[in-house]
Length: 210
Image 1 (cartoon, one colour):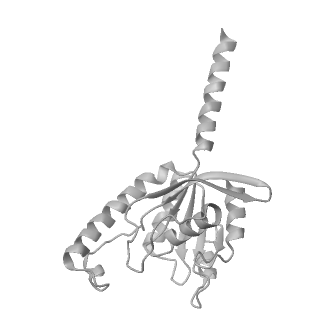
Image 2: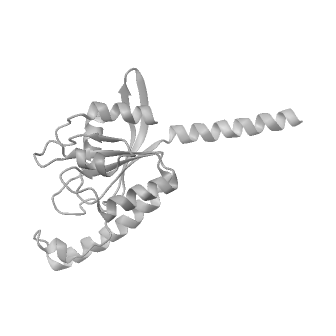
Image 3: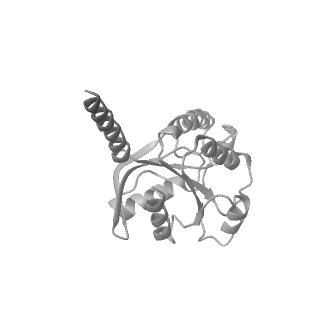
């Protein structure tokens, strides 16, 4: 009787572990316009031959969580299948007036701000569902700001594995070294999601971490 009970518990644990591994989720988080969707598109193009979502110079183009299932990457004879989760940009303040300078009408700007605010809340709710997070930062900007520190602090507190991706290294003003210096305790890989530069190194690190 005791043996059957132990066997049942073991089988239950194995089923839970299998479900978790088969439902692996890798989330892309970061501030607004850091290139999260561009990176998601690059990953999907590399391994699926199709993009995930639209990108724009206008802030908060992504205002809802976007998913692409059954992404499978192959590195060094190893395969990793997962669902990629592209999340809205995290911001501490969203003002509709910021959208007016991009040519949006007042009504559209207010609607975009409302949707963007909901998107930030949705992104935070999804955080605990992630098995690995890629924190996408714009390497042309100063990394020491409230949004970046808040994101990294939350991941640390929740003990969610994460990797910093210093994006846009193809630009002359890029300084990926500033990100490494600002957050020396965390692994950082510099890439260009737009051109595909150094994506192989990113894939290797994702497989290694998972």
